[in-house]
Amino acid sequence: MITRREAALRLDIPLEMAQRHDIPSRLSEAEFAELEATPPAWLVQSRANRTGKKPVWVQLKCDICGFEEAARPKKWWPAFTYLSCDWHLAGELPVPAVGMNRREVDGIGSRFVGIVDEPV
Image (cartoon, rainbow, N blue to C red; front, top):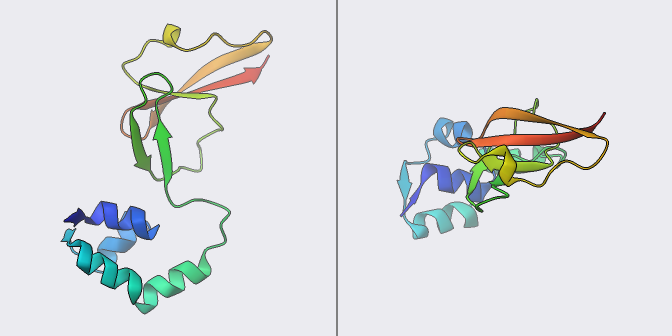
């Protein structure tokens, strides 16, 4: 059995769209395979409208411990130099290069802090 969230990830659609179009909260692999093999009109249209400029899901990975999760990217996220779980210390990451200033961005995914190194 896969969850609605996993189905949305695999179909590359937002979770909200999966809920709106009544994808059940749990599906068997056979049900999911059927959905993929004969997609409903709304899924065909969604895929046709996709430009590829902005991903629907991104894979976040801690650069310290390797913990991973999928999340919907936000428009306000800058390009991160590093990502770390919020319980890691800043000293566990490599020091910024000479001439770079480091800032932290909280609230990335469920537990990440984004680290951005910018020129001074």
